Image (tube, rainbow, N blue to C red; front, side, top):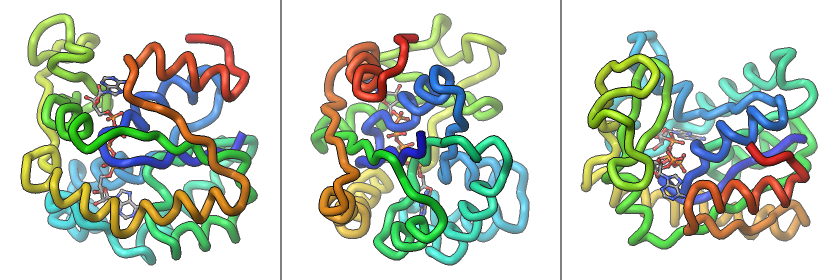
Length: 212
Ligand code: AP5
């Protein structure tokens, strides 16, 4: 299954992608995670994109398209993948259309009020990318990763100013992709307001996966 998870920041794309990738045996490819990995490791790419991510703006299309093109050529993506956070602009969607034929685009729907609640309470384990929420999915010990006990951190772009900017950027540049994919018969809307288990149950049903 070749899929794109589309939706506003904080809608739960990453949380669900981890579970679906595991159940379907396909890779979860998150452009945001790839950029954050490069920032953490202070690579040339990381140095180039750090300020962009912190502000909530988008990395230039040329950089992002090349990165995804390389990633999709890896063997593990041959039989399917979940793209999380790509495409985000019409030029990215056009470029992706030249690389692969998608099966589905899942449109995660969530109100701005819920987006702000989810992002402001999100905490992540930098080593693994595991994601928690202080209220909705807290770690067993406050501020610590369940598996390693290492400290959890707040993403720099989960601060108030950056969240506002990310929502504006989403509306201006990414939301037009909803009509783009709907008109091509690829889009399925998913209400992502329910609890994580209920959103996963709806998604598993939609994709014909066993529950996990
Ligand atoms: P990226 O990492 O893609 O960020 P995003 O799209 O803003 O998505 P998020 O990771 O914030 O949200 P999510 O939907 O995955 O939510 P999550 O599952 O974590 O991109 C970051 C930056 O990288 C961009 O701003 C840009 O600069 C750059 N970038 C990336 N891709 C790019 C591209 N293609 N082109 C150009 N630039 C690009 O959930 C959020 C919180 O809610 C968590 O705490 C979670 O525990 C909780 N939660 C999840 N589901 C539920 C639920 N059902 N109920 C209650 N809580 C829930």
